[in-house]
Amino acid sequence: MGIASEIPPQLVEEIRSKALNAARPRGLTPEQQGALSEKIQALLEKNNAVLITHYYVDEQLQILTDATGGYVGDSLGMADYGNRHPATTLVVVGVRFMGESAKILNPEKRVIMPDLAAECSLDLSCPIGTFSAFCDEHPDRTVVVYANTSAEVKARSDWVVTSSNAVDIVAHLRSKGEKVIFAPDRHLGNYVQNQTGADILNWQGFCVVHDEFKAKELQRLMQENPDAEVIAHPESPAEVLDMAHAIGSTTQLINAAKASKAKTLIVATDFGLFHKMHEAAPDKQLMAVPTGGDSASCVSCAHCPWMAMNSLENLAAVLENGAGHEIEIDESVRKKALIPIERMLEFSRSRGNV
Ligand code: SF4
Image: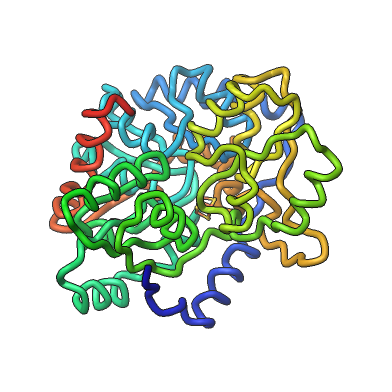
């Protein structure tokens, strides 16, 4: 496997600084939470809107989404659900690329988000200018990009993948003799290469959450909990994945938690997922893979700073007045980005995975 050039240190610094400075919602009393939830429910009906929410956001938002008939899931499920639901307004509670995916698939619908400044370090580490130039240097390769990218990067790609279908799609491309550029997550690209044996040029982007899980500290935690099993998202470093009993997308990790015979699970992904994992496997004790310890450099502490920007307060505010919170994408970019997304959805539907 080849690697694309490293992400420039200045860009890495910029991304880390954005993560550290992401706005933190204030804490609310149970009474305030209750009042806001009721208000949001009424506003959803008034706006013919539905909540489409990622597993990593605050538990209260996931509970409210379920209670109002919306969807909580991973980015593949979110894209598919928004596409099928009849609501005229989609409220995407997650990070910006998820809102963009919803808009790419549903140009006729209004897509709003509680905070458009909720970004993703993978998206930020793959700027369209440098990425497109890199692809131009390798015209013989199929361009495969992770869903965690901008609409422009998707428009430059041949395939969009998520962590639940990346291995299957790249294996499919390899079976046709295609060589691949994979972007932007270096750990996922590495994992996909190991699983498929495909010829991959791997972009060196990173997730500020998963990149920080520490193998050394995980080893210590496993020694202290010898009966525990480790389940990990493939955006985690290879040394962490090497110790995992199960590896998969967020939905696949929930299923793995349900299926596991172990009473204790050590989980390498954003701890926002614990809410749905507890629902699916209430008898299991869940522990987060350490991000601290001897080699600490914690920016995220197992929780995405941009997912954490979503709150009941800004959700209510955007439903009251969505001005400035609506996702807009240039139509020519949208049409180009739609092709690789539809290719992915068609591939996944043909295998019964959405
Ligand atoms: S957890 Fe990582 S990959 Fe997911 S949105 Fe946050 S920064 Fe991006």
